[in-house]
Length: 206
Ligand code: SF4
Image (cartoon, rainbow, N blue to C red):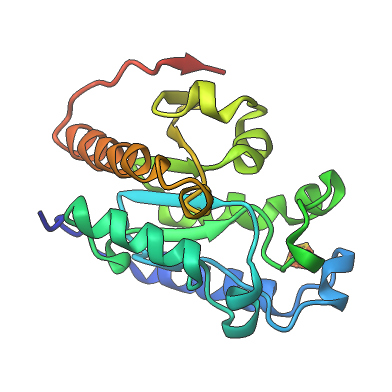
């Protein structure tokens, strides 16, 4: 199943180029001192679905692209099984530079970087934002207990979200592969329903 494209207008393209340039030169928090490359979001600039993870890891830091390591392979596989290519979605992280030793980014780092994610959301204007993992869940919606809340839709400030686990979790726990695949298929289906005009009642409202 290939998605219809909305088309990227020049304002959106220019805005995303500006965000990328700002992220690549950003020195707002201490993570700039240890990164190899800042990692702005990438993918379909008119995507219906935006996926948001925690932070870049080693492979992402080396290449300056999000989700290109083992977790990215898991994510790309789940997307493919749901009928989408990477370029059909926009992929980004809460924090754009790798925390040393892949530690969880601090509240201050997340706060300092939040403006970039908000700018990406406003520019791409996806129909639904898929939150990947507990750190993104807490940062974006103030949520917690990802295993209890995964598979649910949520709304905040007029935007629709879908909550699932981080694909890295499926590397360490193979039993979660099916769960993650099913969640990605759900978010693809919900995005299609929104596109067709169906009103979705969220499971959680903030
Ligand atoms: S993590 Fe975000 S706020 Fe911190 S230096 Fe990188 S781009 Fe800037």
